[in-house]
Each structure stands twice: as C-alpha cells, then as structure tokens.
Length: 373
Image (cartoon, rainbow, N blue to C red):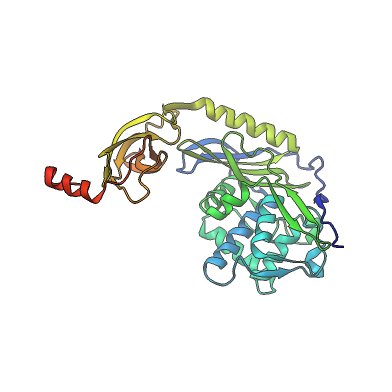
C-alpha cells in the first residue's frame, strides 16, 4: 500500500530575536518615477541581511535570460549547501529542485541554503564568482554604496566574511529593478510555496512578508540578523502610483511592520482622487463591430499625490472586432499619466459594454452606405 503523503508546515529554524542594532532606522520611500515621499538617513550604510537575496535572484535571472541557465535546471543540494543555519529549505544532501523553485524559495521564504545553491549553480561551482556578478549588477544599477560579500546576506559570525552593506537609497534602486521583472513580481506576491521533501511529504513554506495585500503591497522581501535588525523592501501599487518603500534597522518584526503601516497610511492620506475605478471615460471607436463605438470605463483608481500636478491624456486604441467580439472588460483605450510632458504610467480603459463582429454582409452594406467600416 502506497504511503500517504503528509502536508506539513516547514520547520522554521529562523531565530528572529531582539536586534543588537541600536542605531537610527534608515528609510527611503519613493514612487517608481522617482517622486520622493520619505527620507531618513537614506545614504547611511547598513547591513543588508537577507535583502541581499533580491540581488541574488536578479543576477540568476540575468544569466537565465542570457541563455546560461534555465528555470527548469535540476539542481541538487550538496553537504556544503544543505545545512546552512537560519531560514532554510528542509532538505538533505541529494535532494533536487528546479532552479525556479529555488529562486521562489529565496524570495518567499528567504531560504539561505537555496541562495547558496543558486550561487553555486550559476557560478559553475564558484560562489565567489557569483558574488562578483552581484557586485557588477549593483554598479550597473548605480548602487554606489553597496558591497556584497555573500550570496544571502548572512552575518560575519556565520560566514567569516565581511558584512554585506548597502543603504536605503541603494535598496530602493534594487527594489525598482526587481519590480520590473514579472517573474519576481509574481513570486514575491505568493502567500506560500509548497515543495516536496526527501520523504515525499509536501512542505508548506509561508511568505515572510506579513504586509502582503495591505495598502496595495504585492512584494518584495524581508531581512533580519542581529547586527542588521529588521529590514524590509516593499513594492506597492496604489492605482496609477507604484511605490517602493525601504526600511533598515527596525528593532523587532512588529516594529518594522507597524512602522510601514503608518508610512503607507500617511501616503494614502496624501492621495487626491482624480478618477475612480469604473468611471465612464467616454466613447471609444471600434472597427468591424455591430456598434461603431463602445462606452469605456477606467480600470483602476487614478491619483495625484501632493502637488504632483500630473496631466492626463486619453488614447483611443480603435480596436478591431474579431470573431469573439468585444466583451466587457476588454481593453479599448488607455489613459496616459504625464509629468512635465513625459508619460510616466498608463491605465487601461476597458469596455463597459459588448459588441459582436459585423457580418460580411453588414461590412459590405456599411461600406456602400458610408464608405467605411
């Protein structure tokens, strides 16, 4: 008789106690477009802790995109990578996972052993080579006050290496780069990850980001060790505004989360509504449809923030009606948000009504009658 698979919650070996760090908390909060919302010691150097894993993932995906690796690569734990302390995948040497699942476990569960195995795999057995790629990418992103010494941000007491250091501003730059990648956006928004262990059981690894789905937050990464305190990068979407918030050096997990709740509540209080989701935005042309125009509605909330003085421009896509017609919710236009004449974001205008494709006879009759479709 086949053994029944168990579903178990991961054995959590992350010990998150009171931080030894007693300095100032460093912050940098800004929109993707660079509108600064909060600064506090943003250029002061500070240990990254596990925020370094975001760069680990960025570098790995770079190498995948260059054809040097694949998300489907089967990667197996070795004795030197399986038993790293702190947050880890519950594995034994010889246990194998896809590279994609290792990367997911880094961003969702902050698995240290996964980060080292990724570094070893992408570095062709040379973890130092991988760390050099992390530093190269940091320079490329103009993270001028960042230096990585490890692939996971572990403290000197665990690695014997110098501390990985950065600043709140540099972590914002890294967070902005990460949030441009749809894979990282998707993975960091998942509430949990389920992976098999060597016994064939299904192990559930919970996302460490306790603020997911609040204040429009969809990612990104937590970090902790005693010398760093509690660090956090958050990515949030509030209507047309994409916000990246970094805080470094909070004393406890609760303080870190409460601090960010206050910051985002303050930001929301600063928003000035321009258009509310579902608002009618006029008629939009369609081609080859029984209806020549359709009512369009805005698909998301649109805000000004403070004295941003954005301007707005409607763009009619004049979509072509095909076999399945146009359904409610199909995109038929775009609202462009401009700052000083430059388009900084776009919000879809969707159909508020339906239309079927015009028959060939109807098309012919329309051409005869009006000279157009």
